[in-house]
Every structure is written in C-alpha cells, then in structure tokens.
Image (tube, rainbow, N blue to C red):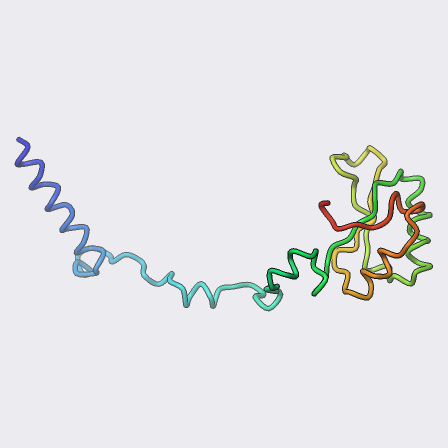
Amino acid sequence: MLRLLVVVLVATNLLFFGWAQGWLAPALAAPRHSEREPQRLAAQVRPEVVVVRPPAAVRDGGAAGSACLQSGELPLSEAADAEAVLANAQVPAERWARVPGDGADAGSGRVRLRVPAADAALRTRLLALPGTALAGGFRPCGG
C-alpha cells in the first residue's frame, strides 16, 4: 500500500513538472509565463513620480528633498487666523491644506494645516513662523 502511494506521488510530481515546463501544451494548457518582470515593468502606472531618496535624506526629515510639515492642532475657529499667517508668509494656497486633527473625526472641530511637500526654502520659512498662531508652529508630519 505504501509502495503504491509513493509511486502515485512520484508520477504526480513528474506530471506536474512536465505541465509546468510546457511539455503537455497540446493536451493541457501551459501555465501563464507571460506575467514576468518585463511585462510588470511595462504595466507600471506613472513610474516617473517615484523618487528614490538617499538614506541620509530620510534620516534628517527630508532636508535634502521635499518634506511634509504640519502645524499643531487648532480649533476650527482659529484656523482662519493661522491661514492668514501662511498668506502673510507668502506660502501659496495650493501648497497647504486643512486636515483633521490626530484621531479626530470630521465633527470634532480640530484641524491641522499641512504642507505635504516643502522644499528647503519653504521649510525654512515655515519653521521660522511664530508658533503662537500655529499651535506650536510647524513640525514634520507624523511626529
């Protein structure tokens, strides 16, 4: 009985190997080998937007490239004043956005002002802004 089981397993493995190699293609459809790396690379969507940064740029918060900065949590009633501070600092309105505060749902009334991509010059200007109107000033996102 055990001998029969071993023979069946070996035959099954040989049959599978032959199918995987495409030797049984007329009788059984060969496995799809077309989804290998060259086809995956050709199927990428907008690969030019991927930016590989050196490890040093990641460690120091992205100072070598663009970094995400955000203000402290603000009550919704003070958000307009904080936005005025950004406008006075000549930060274009399309560079920042209001986002809900940490762990806040849409109805909590607390927001942050986030600049998702600040280059070195903008980063310097944002970090120099007064912290009183911005709930402690700008800091790296997620921190």
